[in-house]
Amino acid sequence: MSDVIVVGAGVVGAACAYYAARAGLDVTVVDRGSVAGGTTGSGEGNILVSDKEPGPELDLAVLSNRLWRELAGAHGGTGAHGHAGASGQRDVPGHGGADGGFEFEAKGGLVVAETPEIQRQLAELAAKQDVEHAVVPAAELRDYEPELADDLAGGVFYPQDAQVQPMLAAARLLRHGAESFGRGTLHLRLGAAVTGFVRDGDRVTGVRTSRGDVLGDAVINAAGTWGGEVAALAGVALPVLPRRGFILVTEPLRRPLIRHKVYTAAYVTNVASDSAGLETSAVVEGTQAGTVLIGASRERVGFDRTTSVPVLARLAAQAVALFPALRDVRAIRSYCGFRPYCPDHLPVIGADPRAPGLYHACGHEGAGIGLAPATGHLLAQVLTGTPPDLDLRPFRPDRFPEESS
Image (cartoon, rainbow, N blue to C red; front, top):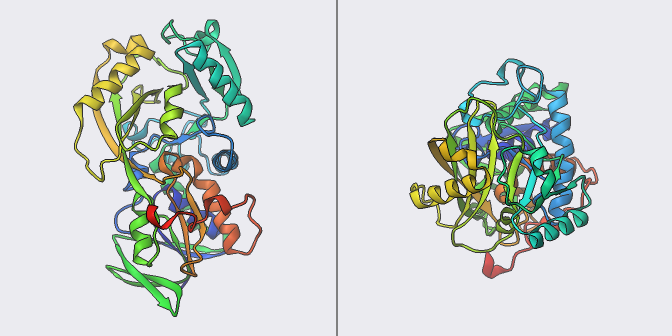
């Protein structure tokens, strides 16, 4: 019998388990696959404030940014060499493992504008966001990124933007949560698919799995892209849908080419878009392994993993337009993942009044890695009766109209 059962061993589920254990709760994490085997394992590890409109999600991102930095300081998140190295993703397996770190890198983000009008809009957005930033004139862009194209109209630099190696981050959060700080405990049950819920009257008191029932006082649905399916097993509707995205990975470069996370203003627009069709925008960043990660694409095509060569070609062309030096660099592989999309672009966080005992932590779309610590921290506060640091009403599970669920 656990105090809390967490469904999902991705980074959001890991953060929920970590903070619940730190708060003194006994936690069991259940997943049908492996740690970080879903969306987390296909992510870039972004921790961004730059792409958020003013409002609840930006407030969540600012809190989470602070918590990531605290986690990195407390648990050696900067990697094996004791400095904030760039995340190599799956191209540097094991880096950061020697000290239990997860390759936290406070690299900063540079958003660039193709026209003076877009530059004006970026500057206006940055002023409204009320986060640390610097408006960068066109003549100063190459002080930040020497290899940038010379036809850009300017940009905005966000020093708080950062990155982690997402698979390492999920694994380390679970490991450190299991150490329990002398308080709660954390147990993993992998390879156990959730098939239903256990109830005592109307109240959820556990989950049924392919490997037997797991009982607990509370259940957190942190199933990511499959959060809607898990909710449906409890008889409640959540309109969480998969939004596919591709990443291109280049061959390792002999010298670092890109210093920060760099993307065009179109990325901000695409993040906020409701379109089911294909949208792409240039997002480019280097890794410690010397490779370059190139994105980003968005489209709602269900769980279709078919590689789209036209999409990859468009991503490559957009990256070359931003960094002409990439024209002579070879792409060596690609991968895709599914962002858990909600219609209003806000995650679902908190208790579900339609199913007492059930809590949700899903629907973060492409921001799950960045928002994970705040999500786990806030839910741990709710579960222990502590007033949460942020108002969770904008994220409530029952906010969607029936027809959208």
